[in-house]
Image (cartoon, rainbow, N blue to C red; front, side):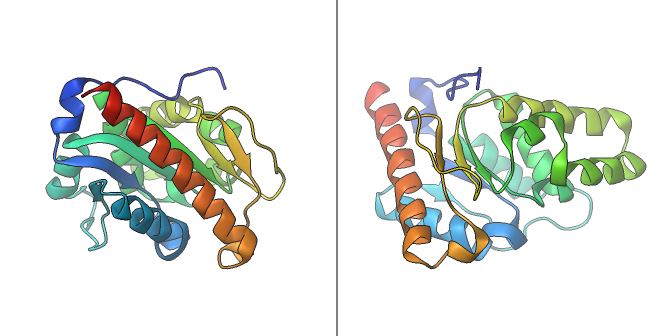
Length: 206
């Protein structure tokens, strides 16, 4: 991928309330990958925000959730097949991109090129959003997806099983492997790499 993992960072970032904001589609990863990642990072003494109380109701994103995004040093965006189905997730994503802080995407069972172009499992969701929301709003969501899709991160997909640079990794992982030895290895590996990134950020800003 062409873009750098780090969008921007500053010493002030680590004085924010949260080290990490997790953006994810609950029905895809809440009780599996996301919960594991949250628990692992919390054990490493990182302050991780996880929306586990259903703050999003109606058409507007909860102010508390938006405040958490703005008060986080970096965001880990877990892009899964039904992520774009939620306009709340897309609102989170757009705000995260506007802040121009550190962004780490995890492409969970989605192709990064599909994220960039809103194709594959994401295409129909955006077509549905066009019928419901203003063109300007949907355009903002598309711009955010394009930006995040171009950032090197982690790719979990059954079609690939390779490792590249530290900031551009791909591991085999499938829905059915979540609780198998290989699935656990995948989770541990990505958590380890994310922890390294967070520690580097903390060290560089001290």
